[in-house]
Image 1 (tube, rainbow, N blue to C red):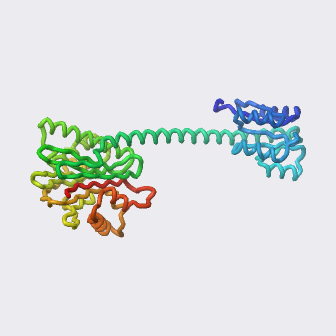
Image 2: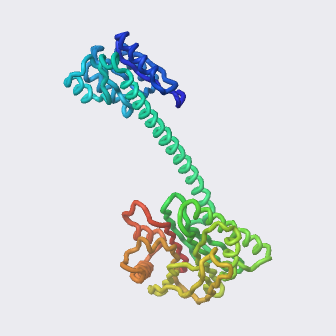
Image 3: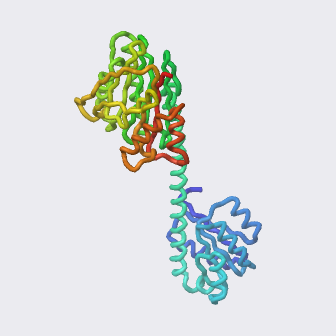
Length: 387
């Protein structure tokens, strides 16, 4: 049906009543009106099966039980129903209104004061039009949301393909990670890359905000990483072996895009031959937690976020690693859900959590977000270990 067209139902077996209603409708300013008439319940059912109505007139003298008026009003609701009664007695008006009529016309009014009733019909038709418009907008919004959801699910699948395996083994090192997104798409990202001469590059990045726009930056970050690695594999660059240089290049590339997003990141390179961790920090918090001999300590270091400053400073550090160790990296979403009355308590609770035997990224996330239906921010946990 044309969205400008409005169909009116008249339920009556009286030709005079039908003609009067039609005359009233013809006096209305509303255009594109179509009228359907039913004289009995079978015809009424057939019309309801095949058409949507903006307004219904029900002749209560048409041997109509109050229950039938109620049924018609329910089928038409929230659009209006007008009852037609022989007289304007309080009893007939009350029965009609109690059984779903939005308005009541008397036979005398229809014959003597049609202009007042025309105004009422126009108002009811306007109300029905608004109901249709709201329904159309609701359906359009619902369809748009379904399309958006489908697009986000497809985008999440692409984003997941860009991530490394959840477990990576390189020599005697093992890298694991686990991520929980606050929305369909995540602004957290990790990467694990085997370099030459027994070196292993890894990083955990946290893009500002969350959702689709932040997820887009993680795709960009992966693209930048791949370009840097292509040059490295062609022996044209040693940037991946230098965390500080890698952060500087990430910052330069992100500024060029001018997308108004920034990120924090921790980049580490472990030299398995020298048993040394080389790392740099790009405004990232909380700092990674290193567990050796059952004791957890936060790494030291500082640096500026990526994508905000033309000439940021990053601090490169090196530390020797124990024979056995666990290094935990977190996105700042972990601080939103771990227990603690202040930041110091949260960081201490995080270190205590890391000290537990047989701890893993998945176990940490299961502990801190237990019972939560949703997360306030994306959360990512990575663990690099040698045991």
